[in-house]
Image (cartoon, rainbow, N blue to C red; front, top):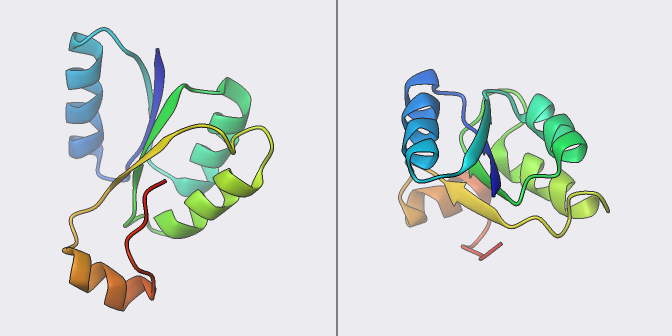
Length: 99
């Protein structure tokens, strides 16, 4: 199973990658939302772990673009965030949703 990790924190990305690889997953990590979208379109992973707090193109916009693209719309996305649910709602203007 191929997993794409989109996380700007190098330390968290490498730790996540290490855990997944130890559990038998094929993992690719990237630290940028724009590059993550391109990589998802090219490599078609089985799942994506997506940080919501990305610099530049924030995670919610990355998610929207992934779900609006025929090549990536069916890929399950697991959202990673250090924000509490209430703080995230205030910042993003969205309620929690399952993707």
